[in-house]
Length: 124
Image (tube, one colour):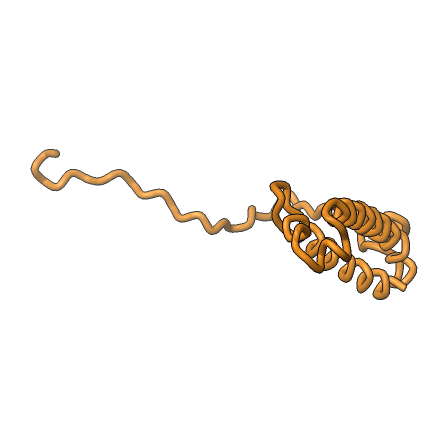
């Protein structure tokens, strides 16, 4: 079920991208082409922007709803959610491992500081 929802979400995302790219705020896109012959007969001069706006809202709503639904379906198909949730439910929260008092601190990768330069013999 989760894989099916992901495929549908991907298809809606592509369609939503195309619909948004067809729109133009300054009379371009499909709405600007609508004043020509065949498009005027199919969509009309004002129906193209209305159709594209409704399609955008519908696809965006479907996209959000399916994304939320996939969140509820993922735990059923994928075996129980995240590792953190599984550890929290079983009580296996790992405590940090601290060194014992008698051991040395681990070596660091920082370079040793240079000693101050010695005079070169001229008294400097």
